[in-house]
Length: 404
Image (cartoon, rainbow, N blue to C red):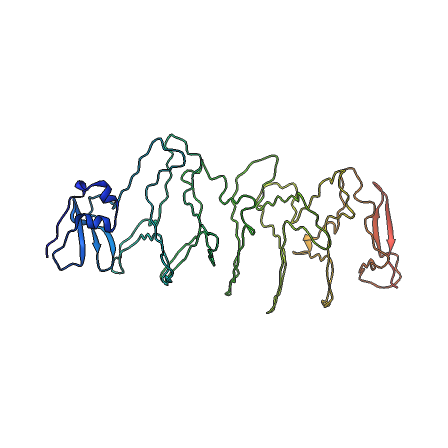
């Protein structure tokens, strides 16, 4: 077998830049038999670096075996440009894979496949970090108006069809050991210059900006969306929020039974027994040794409506229950005090005010709304069973309770 070597540095750049049949035909080198290929081109490292064209598979190969003291880069393509004409751009590499004719391509069409990792199962070395694709934008000391690390453009012409389109797909094929995995992660090389937004979606760019479909199983409870926030802020005004929704209705009439719900949870239980089902659960844990001015599990502030709006009815909390299939015990509000006897609450309701009356009426029960029921623990006409009402700074009046 004889193989003709060609000095890569001596090749014409235009010919070498056209990888494929024109490049092969330009040299028309025969390997002399033994290897079913048209051409081999060797670099400075002898047999460790070569390009060849496999005639039987109609494929071009570029391969290099890197030694300990040799550079790790196999192929380097650099396109330098200065003043470009209007509408022209600098493009380092364009790879095209296109189907022709009317036949079906059962195996699909891949524009480029890039692999990084160990070569075979017999290679058991350790790689500190493997990156399939690195997109590096370098502004140096110049100016780049808009920079996209990775950009995907999909074109569908009139009459064309794409059944399912995925802008980004992270597929995991694992049969070994995986410690931590993230389908998408946001990092910065210098925490002093963080990203402004980890995920940003401009208005009107998606019908459903975020949709998550999941069907968790197993005996352990898991969080579907989890935010772990360790903040060290020291602010005197403003709000530190875990989730913030800024919803503004700018036009259009919402009529009939339609609603606007900036934050909504729908929960259904179609099978199985559930001991506790809370559509929204709020929990406050240990607070350390600091001083907290006001601690509340749920805080609602409804601002001044202003003079331009007409509001037929306004409430801080609106509770609606359809108790058609009657529960054993049903109530609009249930209060349960956890802890021992020493943890008795001061008030069931505390109507505080800032110099204004808390309300015109503390309690309003409609004509058919029901009764005010107080369980005094003892039945009978006893004047000692009563409700104390503070009607002045130091004036207390009593409402007597009777057993009807």
